[in-house]
Image 1 (cartoon, one colour):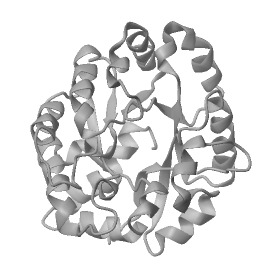
Image 2 (cartoon, rainbow, N blue to C red; image 1 turned 180 degrees about the vertical axis):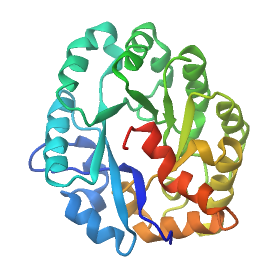
Image 3 (cartoon, rainbow, N blue to C red; image 1 turned 60 degrees about the vertical axis):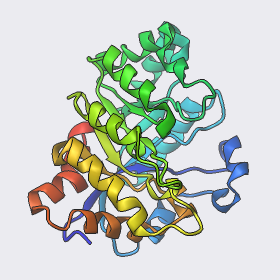
Length: 284
């Protein structure tokens, strides 16, 4: 375990009595309310100084209500230092009123519009989506890219077309660990890392392995490859909790990362566990 407090760049919290999340019906293991107190129980001995809330695919039309809910939790616990909100960027310039509404919540530092759930991931390259995406820098907002390995080509194209946007690749691009596949993800990570406006979350990796029989050795090469490509200056730790509860405990993920970076200096470890997230999501 790190001998210093960490920053968790990707935490999901939700209250199923307050808001509705249709997708949870497909994952009964985590289909209940999870609040900050539950995170504290899950982290065990891992010390979290601050964490970033990542939108939880709340049902359509409730994304601003979700931000209100999370902001209330942040008022009660200052460790919840940043919010990545959902916005339906496919609406193009019509998203302006939502962006204006988000100004009421200074903890909103990033936007995510899930791509992995779309049957046609090319929707993120449509003109309206790109128009809305290019509004984000004016509001000092990042964009989290969440794709599975088979849609990495769209992530790369998105970054190519919007060099002015600060991007965060979630969950290392969700490689097909379950089947032991590396290419083309392996080469695409290297290509994506060549763009200076992209950082990568080392998060949500174990859930891409076989849920019933995964071993640390299955996931470590993928983590090591991402760190080799992006370097410690552009990788950040994320738990992907509560989704991570489907496969592993909170401390298990920290232990895996510790093993991968066992030869790293303390400065490099701090970059991964703290500094990149602080810089990217303006947590200082």
